[in-house]
Image (cartoon, rainbow, N blue to C red; front, side, top):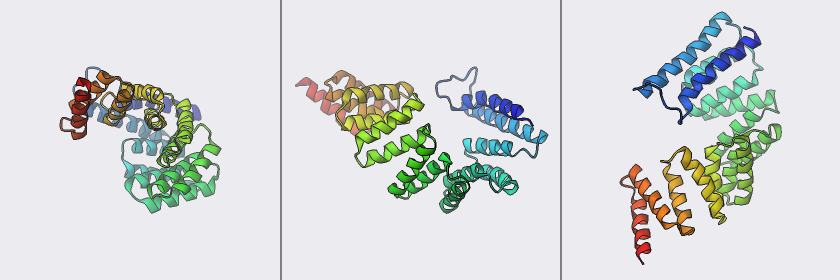
Length: 278
């Protein structure tokens, strides 16, 4: 398979991937979304396997297949695909990183760390592996090591929006909100619709008393997912602080429409309605 053919295969898969991941795309004439997603998954994997049938020695296609398995949470098959690559090319640092990701998601943490380390030994400038290892370190509460790896991830790829986002979240935990906002800004500049970074930035804005900034971010988050309860709680609190009581009430009522027995929302709704009557 030529490079152009491989690029064409990836382009064919993009619409299939979009059908499965976009929450805003309605399913046309589809009564069973689960079946639709399963069918799309099978199509995407079969497309890659078909390419492999025509070019069995193309390791790039095995990597593409492994990544597709991972996207569908089939981590064991993903590892098998990456193992094939590594058996043919022990210097394939990307395959080591992806296999480490799969092991990490399976809970095989020591194997994951080993793969990340090997990937970075082969290529010390590989941003994605620093980010992957940072997730491992953060997961075992070694924040300093995680921050060091995130600094390296950004150093070697200043467009790594996930590394900026994660570094911002760690700084936020240490109440370094101004620094955290700066990282979220960089992340959002690379991915303007990065709902996760927008949500976490709103928390830091809220903590710093920048209520209008927080409200802007929360409005964007809830425009994407109107039923996101944590964002509704924060927005309701911001709205109360801005004396927009009726809008705050609507948010608490929205929470209760999503979670009928949410005790906190019930309590806050009673309090705010009492205060309104005074």
